[in-house]
Image (cartoon, rainbow, N blue to C red):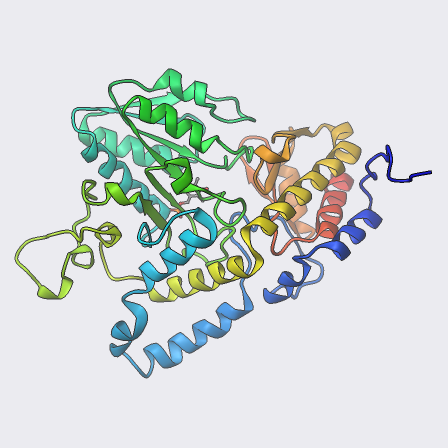
Amino acid sequence: MDQTQDAAPPRASRDLAVELDAKDPLASFRDRFVADDPALVYFDGNSLGRLPSATQERLATVVAREWGQRLIRSWDEGWMSLPVRVGDRLGRVALGADAGQVVVADSTTVCLYKLVNAALDARPGRDEIVVEANDFPTDRYVVDGVAARHGCTVRQVVADPITGPTPDDIAAAVGSRTAVVLLSHVSYRSSAIADMAAINDVAHRAGALTLWDLSHSVGSIPVALDAAGSDLATGCSYKYLNGGPGAPAFLYVRRDLQTTVRQPIWGWIGHRDPFAMGPRYAPAQDIRGMVSGTPPILGLTGVDIGVGLLEDAGIAAIRTKGMALTDFAIDCYDAGLAPLGFELASPRDATVRGAHISLRHADARRLSAELIDREVIPDFRTPDLIRIGLSPLTTRFTDVWDGLEVLRGLAT
Ligand SMILES: *Cc1c(COP(=O)(O)O)cnc(C)c1O
């Protein structure tokens, strides 16, 4: 008898988790990170990614040699071009962006500010900004602030909390007054993946630009900015990219927009010729024009190492493992947590889900705190979500099983 025929999928168990770890082609990547507390289950690589061992070593070198010995000569010996070099590599490895369209600079919040302003400039006469009502707070706050200064209207789209905004939702919100549509590609709450290409299409038909926040997509799922026809994007480097606390964000401006969009922080490093020290600001006509001040070299060093790890692993393999980890977590939830008052607050279909899942529970706040006491670290998201981040390079299937077993014990 053919044993593979009609075989029911094996039930979630610790034995299965061990087996999945043994077969995991990315298993060895965990050894390239500092992960030396065997008791710790880390479900928060999507808030602050683990420390790559290479970053520790490289930072020590940058500090001792490039800063300590080479001093200001290091700007010419590689520092000055680092934002664009790391941006190009990130674009190639993870964003589906050809060279010359990505630069690493500022925080995501500041990049959002620059890009929303740039989009308004590029769409004169239009005075509406479309956002999703439940998007990450900084995105909404920045838009509110920019709108207040420019006398614009913010149109909030209320989307399904699990599946996120659909192209139809956006189609119903955009019109002849819309300048820009700002959306997260992967929802920080439910993990739903928005249909980037279709939403770009809908926005473009209304004459609007799109601005994508890739904070929860970069390094966890493939992004195809160029192919999808995206206009503008930004995102964090300290989540799945493991760049380190407060490491600078990246921003993307589609090549043919670069000579028309203008960002509002006119600093000398974004000048066509910074060392001409000229009387007036004249922005660089390429992606460098989006930069304002001196690049944060120590933070950039961490981003560079994170992008290198991504390149070594390959975003396709990372995506495959992210789907398998979240599928396994949902199997654990179905078997052990659904009967205890938990509710899955993420899509069941792995193809439209990023690398985390969210579980809703009336006691989510207390359970999250008790998990942390037991060295299982999730995120609590108000009012009732426990977010389980399963960063593919550093999370084992046994971590998923063990951590969710602790949660089951706490809720029983
Ligand atoms: C984490 C996150 C941010 C954080 O922005 P910072 O400026 O780095 O604090 C912004 N947007 C989204 C969607 C996020 O998930």
